[in-house]
Image (cartoon, rainbow over all chains, first blue to last red; front, side, top):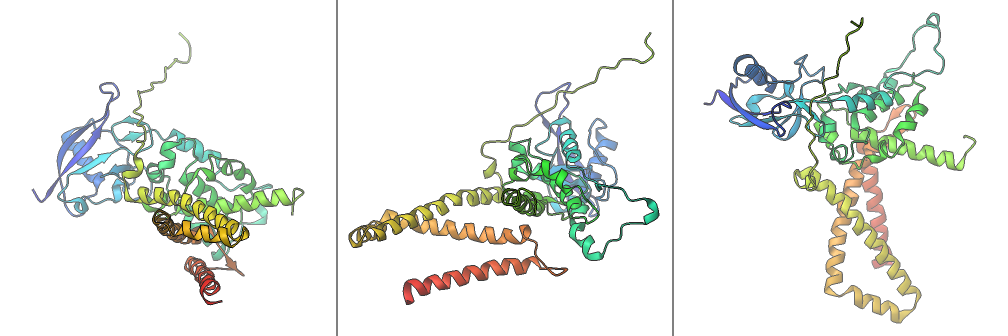
Length: 246
Length: 138
């Protein structure tokens, strides 16, 4: 049927099975349906036990990331028609433990995200009476690209280094650290460096570059990491040659 | 009865999948990455080869001729041709990556990444031209 597409959906029910399996379903394939619509069709009309995460349906919340035909994708931004006539294989994000069906545990990422302090750090908070922090468009441009991250974790799923060494702090956490390091209102770069300059920090990255390719928001985490390597290397040299500070 | 009920956290048996030893064969970009990493060995080989050449030159005409004879053997030629190809691959991938790591400002204006990349290629071309002149022309 040209107006339908076959979806092969990964299932993992921890109370019943030790290995994942695949269920096949035919779903409608109008040109404006995304993969998430197909999954919602299955859940609403065929099998209500299918479990997966989603929320905004517009590429903002970052919760519907899954592996679509082997590639990490936001299922709300991946059109079924692009894969016609199918079949389309939908699996959970790689490199994360699977809790159930298409749901992965994101605890590791959340812990790493907190470790890099993804917020503006000030040595002294100035009183409100002094007004807001002013920023020029050029200063905004320095970090704006990295602020687009929606924590969808597609970059972690695409990164073989994270798969091989889960201690690696990972692309999104480093990109978000850079987002604040490059913000002229922030004064927390030294605190972040303690985490980022570790072996499991930026030096764990060998620049495969897949994180940037799969990023739905064009954040370029690989670029952020390479850029920070240069910063960390210069900082180490400064510390070595000028131990009392420049 | 206690005031607060005691709950036992439900912890499902998570499915943890190991990354295959052959993960780098699963995708073209992964394979290209492994080739780039492997190309470092050929860069190292050219460093060793250059040191061997310098040693032969310092030890006099006879040792230099021996080195040339060694270098013209088919297996050595094949090794050096393969090494050269990997070296070019290494350089190109490195230069392409440079604009993403190197952010340069002139005053308050950020220099476009294409300029950084072009600068690397221009420097490569200049050094290569100088070496050609030194070896063949001077």
